[in-house]
Image 1 (cartoon, rainbow over the protein chains, first blue to last red):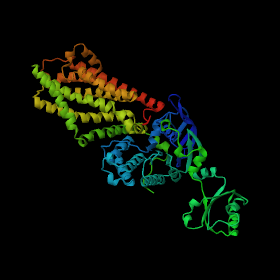
Image 2 (image 1 turned 90 degrees about the horizontal axis):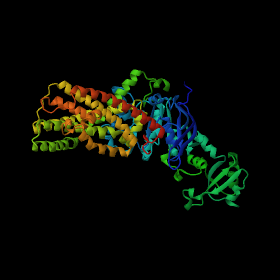
Image 3 (image 1 turned 135 degrees about the vertical axis):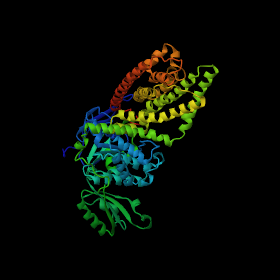
Image 4 (image 1 turned 180 degrees about the vertical axis):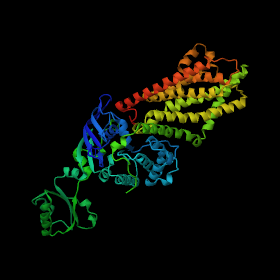
Length: 340
Length: 291
């Protein structure tokens, strides 16, 4: 069934027993992730991302609703799902510290049903790919956090999963290690087009770099879903430009620009000028009803003795989208992971 | 791009179809995989030589000196040495079987076991087999050193039967451990208190340091519940055939009891595991580390 979604969820709800009141971690999620798609769930702690992954990986039962992975029901066809998925979590400390990197991967290859020789071959291949050759005979307990997460990632690849779940995979990693891991994820995708990835993260860059589509999740609900470009457009109807001038326009300054037809607002943002302290250069953030109004802005400043020295169109970041949708930033979380 | 290879199946539906043979082979591989860390730890952690051979030997020695001070029959020394060796198996069952799932949960292994394409009984079986290999080496060392130092003589007329009874004892004993693994996880921290609480009574009821027949009618309770006690009683009868001390029941009967216990404990372990998995998925608090 080539057209069957890799992940299909309808009305998936999960309520945890808690005192004094039950906690609704997922409140009726509808989601379709197509085969071969890299899909991101973006949201703060407590948003319900992990709960959704646990349901899809057969670790949790939904309280209500239905979900299928690779066409198999998460409640009744768990054995089949487990043969085609794998999962890697951030900060994972799985396995046994007394084993070497190579031994640990081989042990997991046996859990995934690989024959002995096939297992060792796959282990050596993944050790090389993930750059753990230098640590292959090192005990797992002596690995650094980054090396450890590479090991976890290699574990997740052992059974060539059709659907891979990455739950905050770069949590706690330094910049280089996180970038390495993202590159591995992209290589994995490139190796076989049918592979599907569901990634949860609260790193915007990660979601944007890895995912074809993203769902912004908060308090157990999907607030928006689309490609990164679609999501950005969603919160920005107007065009925003950053204009740098060699000096302020005569006769009215930036008010002249603000009064032009098609200009919604014009704000001076001098702190963004790199050498603002050493010259008269000024930077303006100008919001236009549409791009065509830009011509009149450029003409108006030229007529008033200013020269354009820089022009850039500002795109909203995913964080802007998140703030717009949720009403708060990631740093202002009030959810709790215990509910997710 | 060939990095990360490519899947051999054409689609996930095809990849998920496993023959019965493949399911069995996969589960057997999982058993071997889980036994591996336990077996390899023999070579990796030599500290066990002190903690698990020398210290048990000291415990055995205390009883040896008590019996010698009381002029007890010399066979009692052999009973104590054999009992000391069997203690290692009980400790292994309590702390490395029963408590293991609880620790695996904390490490994050349990959720990976749940999502792997194998039955959790294979993991338990791997833990048991690995534990058995590991503990056998320790038990043999205790027997060897104890016998050598205290001059124990054995009268084994049916060595194969003795070996068979030992192996048969291990099945319900580790079956009990597999059952406790699920129960400990369900009961959480209280389970550890329970294990500690059980330790001394098991030493007593299991007749670790004395012939089980000495406890009178209580031996009947042991015969019905404790594979360690039943197996030890049968092994003593077979290892010290010329001793004047009788077992609680004839060896044949005790073998029958052990076989029945093996079935009961393994079936109970299977049921408890099924219930645990259901509860884990329904409540979400057993496999998720932070819940």
